[in-house]
Length: 394
Image 1: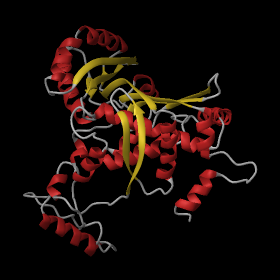
Image 2: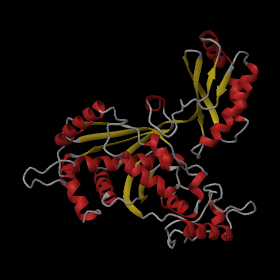
Image 3: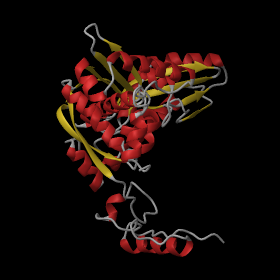
Image 4: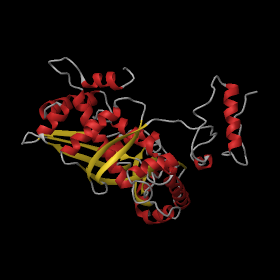
């Protein structure tokens, strides 16, 4: 008979049951626990965030900055906590941030806010499906009221619907306040679907999620319609600042970005950027975000040009930044401290955090984009050299 992981129906986050699980691991696996079973806060605080708790994973957290942002919500200089095990990464982001400061700051703009749940409704034929789409538009206000009755924060702003065969694929688009909102939208949409199923005769059945919300993966619909927050970060870097700090000219950078964009097209990549997932994952891990949301959040487009004055313009648009400053893992003690470093903990701060995240991504793009070039005289490469000096290759 298989051995079962110890659990307690009375208090599964008490120290006694945690010690039982630690002993179970040592008795039934090759591991002898020391570091993973040490933590500095009450285990009960992790209730709702983890099951079968036996310890914590200590991931190094570094500080990058200051990052100068001229945003609508994030204004001024910010120090950014980043959790990673990749040597050289923070050094690279710091270099991008220095370029940003010497250029007067990055400008950020939030242009979208939508979290989805995407039910699919199935009908006997295509004709009923077509008519259902018209019915949805006519009854939007009733559906909206039903969905919003389940939440004090979420607002149903739109129901997209796409007809294919005898099915209607929908996306219920919500604004979710300072929460990421996946659980909130699931409950609200379930109540709305039950009302729809009762009111519209002829539905064969429905699935609460037909996978058209494309949760935790990139998609063309998210690129166009957005998921989470849509944020653009942009900057114009004076020519002399770029050459001094990145050792590359605007023309060279523009040339390389053009080739990278062609490569992204040829490989059907989800973006034409260098590595937005690096900075976002480090920020997400430090601040208690659902790290799997990087699946959508790293999707982006970049655009660059050499200005008429010979300076360098660069921008990045992230259409599906999914993050929170309230709820989920953000209230865990270490994650809360990291959010507080940026004054981004609690209600009213999520747009600020989104602008910081987009600015962080831009800093990383500038630094790595310049590091990829090969010096003609020394035949060296900054990317390789940095990993040799600072990374695990040393």
